[in-house]
Image (cartoon, rainbow, N blue to C red; front, side, top):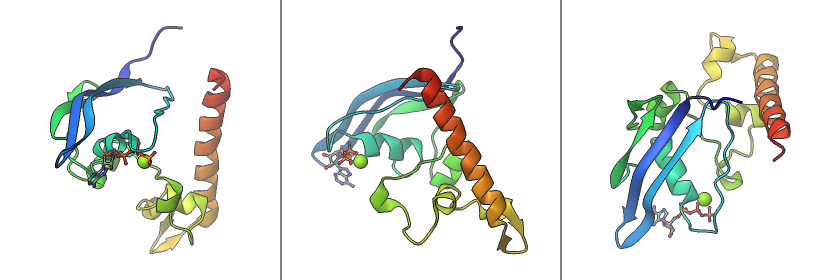
Amino acid sequence: MEKSKVFLETKEIVKKFGEVTALDHVSFQVRRGEIQGLIGENGSGKSTVSSIIFGMLAPTSGSMALEGKTYRPKSPLEARANHISMIVQEKDTIDMLSVAENIFLGEEASFGKGGFVNTAKMNEAARMALNIILAVKNRQNI
Ligand SMILES: Nc1ncnc2c1ncn2[C@@H]1O[C@H](COP(=O)(O)OP(=O)(O)OP(=O)(O)O)[C@@H](O)[C@H]1O
Ligand SMILES: [Mg+2]
């Protein structure tokens, strides 16, 4: 199968927290329709690189590209406007919210009108998103 276009690319990202170098020239590419796993021991920098992609942290140096264009989000809002979302580790999800509400946090307005959220519509969208992930996962045998 022909490889799809690169969607997101990190180039030589370095992140220092004072004396600690959390990321030391991290470069990788994610293609359209691809699911990639980022595996590493505790403290290896998975959350740090994810937070940079999601605009929560700024890199010390290095750059990113989204569909070939420079991507430098200054906030999660800017990341979301570029179709980048982050589903955080369990301790950071909101207990009192449903799975669907956690997935669509900040996007409630697209599921209703006048301050009311159409829960059924939101649940259906979450189900579809999770089914797509499952289908891709099964196809890739991961
Ligand atoms: N806000 C911060 N201030 C100082 N150091 C930090 C900060 N955030 C992360 N670090 C350090 O950066 C390194 C990478 O941490 P990070 O949380 O990205 O790892 P991780 O791979 O997500 O770990 P885990 O598997 O525990 O979630 C660690 O050495 C961590 O202590
Ligand atoms: Mg982490």
